[in-house]
Image (cartoon, rainbow, N blue to C red):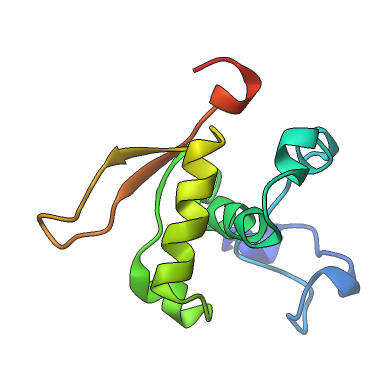
Amino acid sequence: MAKSQSSKPLKRWLTASSDCREKRFVQIGNTLLFDKKFTSLSVGARYLYILAANEAAGSRDFQFPALKMKALGIKERTARKYIKELIDAGFVELVRSGRNTRTPNDYRFSFYWLGTP
């Protein structure tokens, strides 16, 4: 049986799925969600962080390809602005740039915003 079928269904207001089951969902703790450093980010940067957490699927490392952002309705220039904001604030770090190889960048969720690497 697939993992999504054996998992406990979500509350109806937390999903658009008719059977209330998701292959992936985002879980964020209150201590992050309401932290002053997190709430000082722009709404767009916070939203991108949540989307990145979904992309990462529980991993600390992730990619967020331009085509994926476009499919989500986020313009590439806007996404770059929000990613820069997340990097500058210490929530995300650039691990490898794909600029020269025309591949997606590799990112990692960072703890620098907490004062630790």
